[in-house]
Length: 529
Image 1 (tube, rainbow, N blue to C red):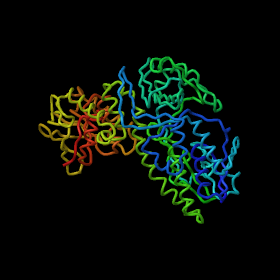
Image 2 (cartoon, rainbow, N blue to C red):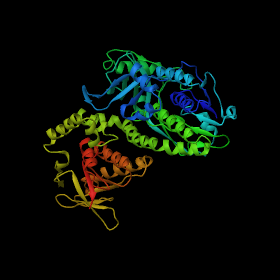
Image 3 (tube, one colour):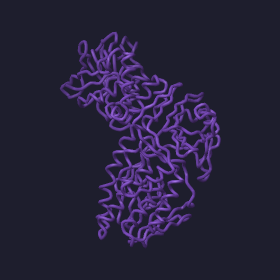
Image 4 (cartoon, rainbow, N blue to C red):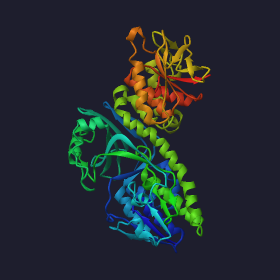
């Protein structure tokens, strides 16, 4: 078999080595448009829990992390002068350049041919039995195949820029700094004995107020945004002890989440997509490098299992590789949403609750407690100190209605919609203003694209007080939609409109309810009875 791999990143190189390892008669050629020692970005980070399949396939990554990388167990969240640590998060990182050089050596040792400074198109590769598109999120191979693969791309609103720094962090560190132009946040982690990765995120309004939109994005790859470098060095000077930011094609971008329904085609030639060419997940949860290397394990395994049936091999590759990628993307979506809204959380929450809100953006209280029982116990203790009771046992009180705890029963009407919430008397829920004490009933949208219209309806309900003697709602009850859209609509009610929020959940899940209340995503959790 003759295999052409377009793209000499970690996924493509790892695949070349694995194919040759399984079948020394296979002819594998990797084409990389950059030089052998070129690399954009600084480091790659891996969770200890996610590397078993990669290590079993080949020990090259394990050696890279042990011999050249940095390992840590704690995540640190910095906010308003406080530093909050949460253990149980074993991770390791290594310089991307170091990893690439080791993977290049491994591929050569296995007998693969590597051709650098060589950019190829699909037309250049017609003589191969299989073409693997491992050429990144801007894949020319994938784009040449047209629309039949079912590609969907969502562009995030938050801005991010990727630097390094000569300041050495202890481990994965999240810094949130309020400056004259807005709130900026950092993902920092060590990748060697001398350098850390330093990714900055902010919202577009803060980015523009700071004048960071002046960089000419039409400049060719390689040039970095030096104005942003100087601005961020000043803003985060105390956090990095006056250290320098290091550039490498450092320029602002909006993260793009890519989902692809089909990862292979047999026409005009057999092509398989791998890594960022097929999928992306926000770097706060998913490691693109890890996912690409796992794709390589799945594709090499499928080819070895079906040596004489390429269509069966490519179908088996999709069946094996797609489900774990979907799980990562599903968990990355609420994490990305958190980064799109963190400025509001920065202003609204005390540091302990901000950190808990952040750490539970994709997982529940019970799952976090399995990793870091002491940290979670501390968050529960802070709630009790402030409220005098456990989160779900804390009374909810307003001048017009109250409930003995934060988990309440919802009465449904004949149409199946929430009609009232039980407390010290049933509180009517209505989508229209009602006399006396009432709760505004809002349906969450099925996708985030519908949130702006929902926010407008919420603002209209919140602005009713004083209009023709109308009382504002006692609370906002949010139902339907998805867990993420319900949470974002409840947070909008609490943090922007200053109205208590109740999320109507489809089932009685005490763990999720506890997480919702303790994190400040909603004041109350209701379950239909």
